Image 1 (tube, helix red, strand yellow):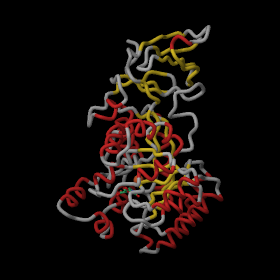
Image 2: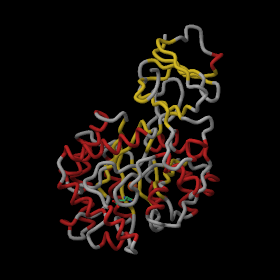
Image 3: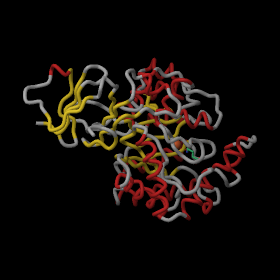
Image 4: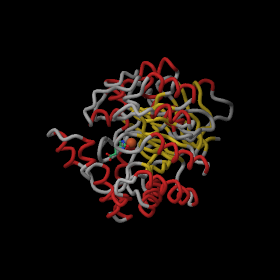
Length: 393
Ligand code: DI6
Ligand code: FE
């Protein structure tokens, strides 16, 4: 006897749920003997997907950068503003100054917005603290988001996001701090599921990232990388060399970089919100990634500087219209491939044993999930076996 049986999905399927897990799924007529449930609910022929997985966000931060965005609209350049103390540095100041309560409140609001649009699992990075206390605070706050929003959270330490002002431009000295102090403290408290870095001319060199990843490896933490976002810095190959879970952005990745991702089994995470907001015409090498069999994920990259995006379906739309993904690729990119980019094996899929995280869409065809800009047609959401939106009256 299951707790919940959802019948009449768009494909004529049914899904049985026991506790927090999917117990069975298949065509309705193939339901096993005894496959009855305490609650049966018809999806009314609508499309049901796994709960969406947003595998790259920076949800915890203080303040916003709407003013900087206006300056960029008027012609200012992202890297120049950062060099002048704006950009990531501005958000670091606001985050350090914010209370835990205010950071949590704002992060929960953003997580709630993502959840209302179909997300049931979200990755959250640190990286706006850049000192021991604030990096740890960010990760602890990220871990508390599920107390107040219906999502599971996966955390990533992005200590190597930028060089903080107190290091006076000494990137090597800051990398030493990340390797010797920050990562061991994060690991000792079990605060991160992975380690990320920003490999870019305005941030860290491949040699510096290599040191961070080696330190992560010693602590048993998997890695992922902001790679080749603004320029081709060999980030994809570097990520592949460290068997990274994912290499993210990739707007400027070379064919060699694509080949190394394929060989390493690293997921390519595409972040079209950032390219769009930065008005960067560069497009990741989608055809080459597809041809090489590299799994492609799509994420919101929700952050105050380059991607103030709180809708994953909107990011999927941009991935199709701007980057050339098909609808099926986009949906796989926000489910199975996104879960793989996080090293999570029981989300992003409708299969027996997986978490019962499901979205019922006001759609009779998957394209309708991705097609709208700003509608996000979510009819019902099941999170770990319980309806958190819609469902039986
Ligand atoms: N790349 C990005 O797009 C974000 N971080 C990164 O490494 C943006 C960070 C910001 O501008 O606040
Ligand atoms: Fe990012």
